[in-house]
Length: 99
Image 1 (cartoon, rainbow, N blue to C red):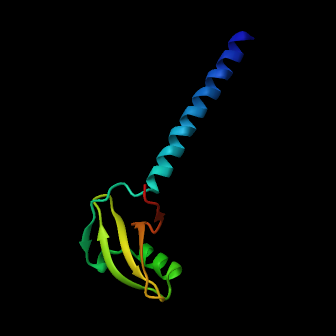
Image 2 (cartoon, rainbow, N blue to C red):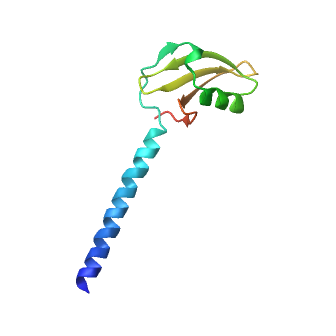
Image 3 (spheres, rainbow, N blue to C red):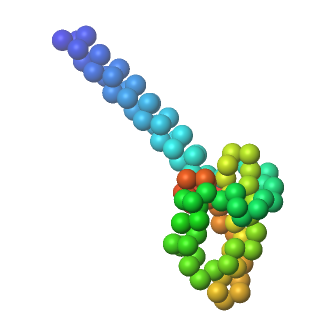
């Protein structure tokens, strides 16, 4: 009986550790990894990125596109009001947060 309880405790502890590591990897994936962006042509944007831009910023214009070595894009958007907004997105069309 004591062995079963011990095994159950170890399984729960290992499962919690595994889940914590998995969640950390997922949340880090949605963060901008590096600031080392280089200016690129808008033709490098993937269809998923273009779709998300049109969905989130339908009345805005794309002023500049930058890309880092992790495949993340830094986009300078000019909103309809004339203000500029910098947004980050990965090649799969997932919006990213700055660290």
